[in-house]
Length: 128
Image (cartoon, rainbow, N blue to C red):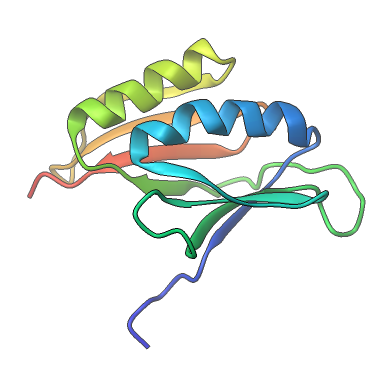
């Protein structure tokens, strides 16, 4: 087994609003919708039509979605400019700033946001 993570899923209380948000920000990371159902939407890299990597979903137990304390999803970006665009577009679409784009202590480049449901998401560009 060469992969540690098969996919990432974050909850939402408004699938339509969340999908519009993620459609606008994930494009900067080379991702697009690849799966759509009544309960969830899956995004994958634009070069891999069959590989869903990131889902937004209504919770299976029908309870309200909420963000986990200490939980964060890191999505890969090819360039610092892609991180900048991800972060800027997210804020323009109602996200909360959780850390402006820039280099961090590990030498890589990150931009942090919280989506409409409070999920903490970062775009990361490896510089080393």
